[in-house]
Image (cartoon, rainbow over all chains, first blue to last red; front, side, top):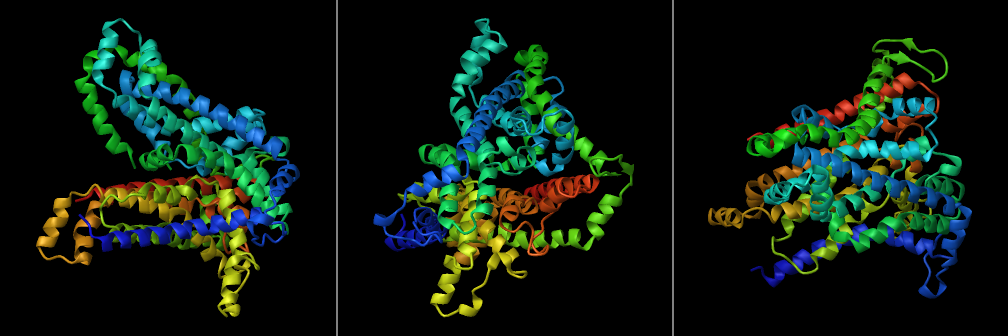
Amino acid sequence: MISKMERAVNYVVLTLMALIVLFPIGTFVTSALSPDRSGKPVGIADFQWDNFATAWRDAGFSRAMAVSMIIAVCVVAGQVLLALLGGYAFGVLGVVGDRVLFPIVLLGMMISLEAIIVPLYYQFRTLGLTNTLPGIILIHLGMGVPFGVFWMRAAFRALPRSAFESAEMDGAGPLRMLRSMAAPMARPAIYTLILLSFMWTWNDYFLSLVFLHGENQTATVALGVFQGKYVTQINLMAAGGLIVAAPVLVLYVAFQRKFISGMLAGAIKE
Amino acid sequence: MPAPAQIRPAQAAVVRRRPLRRRTRWVGLAFAALPLAVYALVVLVPLGQSVQYSFFKWDGVSASTWVGFDNYVSFVTDPVLRSTFGHVLVLIGFFALLPIVLGLLSAALLTRAKQPGMAVYRWIFFLPQVMTTVVIALVFKRIYAPDGPLNQALRAVGLDSFAKTWLGDFTWALPALGLIGTWVTFGFCMVLFISGTSAIAPELYEAARMDGAGPVREFFAVTLPGLRGQLAIALTLTITASLRTFDLVWITTHGGPGTSTLTPAVALYKAAFQNPQIGLAAAIGVVMALLCLVIAVVITRVSERD
């Protein structure tokens, strides 16, 4: 057992580190609530909650947030489907040529977007897919396949073998086994995949910056434009930042355990 | 790189599960076809094309001309482009080494007992990981602003001469950006290492103490070797992140002032989409991808060597 002293030292270290993380965010939040353009912190009574409404209106966030939401929801749905199919194939059924194919899929986790963005843009331009939502959704999906397959394969392999064997005895085909048994049993892993995939898609900036503009701007890119225009209105800029961060933060508050364990386990993903 | 470690269990499984598997491997290929097709279309084909593009000079409109390795040569000889490597080295110090040292220190300081409240701390340490870089960039733009909290604090303690426009300063902009990376990463490293130390067998620590090892020797003899796997993960992630820095720089400094915070990814973006030298952009992308791969392979190899 550890002594009281050791315990106290632990808390001091942890609290100090925590304060370093929280301080910048704290100043940002107080800026967002300040009636002063320079974002000077004020007392609770003077908080100007209108800043959020003003920023929302001025930055045109209704449109941008809707675009981000559509992209994120489509990507998450597609991602789960692809990961289920791929993970089930590589983890349970086995795949012809998997000694070659699976390493190639895993290699994708190491391939950075920068390595493919140039041809991707010019090819998609020829196909008329730049500045379209289906275009960017497709790219997110393709980039997400390696992690998704890796993740669901591990989840399916952790399921008891006997379940598959007895289901097969009952004459269940591979598709029915996936739908009615494997997928429901791997539900915790699927939830984690949904959360991580939503976060990665929502937080994306580079891909949206390259592929989408004007009407199709995502929330992160719209925020970048907004902060460029409102350099002197710190309070509105901060309010806008919190609006864009909010969806993922809400999920993080609600499902913190899944986020943290998922990110630690999935740390090998880029 | 995770690949080699992943292959071994798969092969073992093929042997063990043959009866079920043999009949299903073609079905498996059918199941995997859709994900594989999307992956090939979006990642593998453009990857090949990147290599192809990198041997041409092309402005995106007129016809392209074959230039061999010229684009690669200019990436390493052009003074501005070459300087991006130096910037990455500085960023590695801030994105990788500093957070890892801080993470190790805190993991060593924290005794390995389960404490109540750890979940709350973990939540806080992971907070920067879930925030989009755009917002993080804005948070720190505020901190570093001429009238921002950092300069106010300096003036308050009488260090007025140190107050400056941090992100607009030729000398200080890069370290200032680097510290943002430190802030984002150290909590992650800390949690990773704390979870790692709690998995080290307590007997090892007892044995070290019996041998009369002090806290420092204990750290180097037990904790550090025990964290080998976590160190490899942290190094790979943070070094490749430093190499790939884009969002943070693009939103705060656009690579400036001058080119003092230009990173390879920002140079790539400018070459690809602003004053199109598409071959050069592709070459930068290919070099970045190769470097990431080499870094990952080297770190994995070193960490697995006994």
